[in-house]
Length: 367
Image (cartoon, rainbow, N blue to C red; front, side):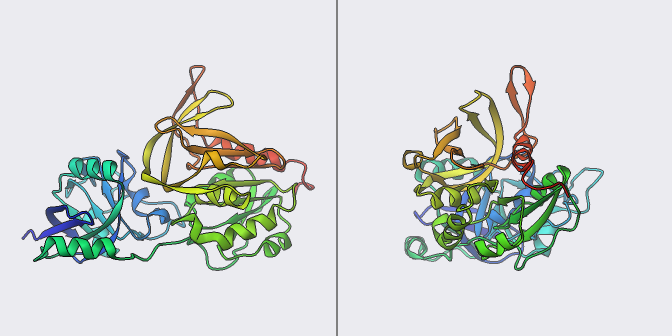
């Protein structure tokens, strides 16, 4: 028997739906995602930790639960909202229904919601606190006011808890500063001959230097970058060596910019989805990228040694930076085999990993 559930926004708007997944109350920042496919990547993305994710695509779960790459973390989002949850998936890799997966991982889901109206509200008014409720509030206005005043614990950088040595040998020794990395990042580096050592968010610059790496990748992760000021301070120390190649992704991009004196500001509704358009201002190439962030580097605050490299074609926000006095660059989006057109040829932002490995060439003897 279907059980009614409710999504309450901090501005007082209440949406009625059907409870699925783990049927419980949950609170978090409500954000919307515009991806058409890839819901398994969404559910396991550490950068959604503690948030209530709204899917704009009308039906979710069509291909069921499919195997994820080794090392993919368990879901850490607070709640999930969609228009329709498919109970009869069809795919040769299907290993069960999405509803069962949500139950197993303790994630509450609210379906049968007008996600189009909900998304437009969040787009116009901005992301805000929200709660999925198993019971309708007796006093909606009072419940919304309490929700608006509530300080929901902010999720910060997550990832490995200790230094994990490289599992595979490689030509280059790379330190992955894990703030909540996607499993694909390690795979992309290993494909290019890198032996990848993982280090936790609270690592020191001295500990990284002691590993004697050829290069460092600072990964994406959850939360407000200003809550990770200690990480930014360590990055400042690390960059004291002007010859060490460094690549920043997502949260790593923001913390790199902070370490050089740039400022961070919050986006109204964020960039979340697999269809975010960006332009390389140096080459004119355009890409469709995968993104998940609610903050941006203020392009007007970039220091003299930083050059704006990528911009978002929707709002002009900063999507990537080249640092002119050291072999360091960063991007806001996740480098991947996403579509792009330049001179009629299909290209992908995964080539940024090629750029990073090229920076390490000749740093030390090949190993």
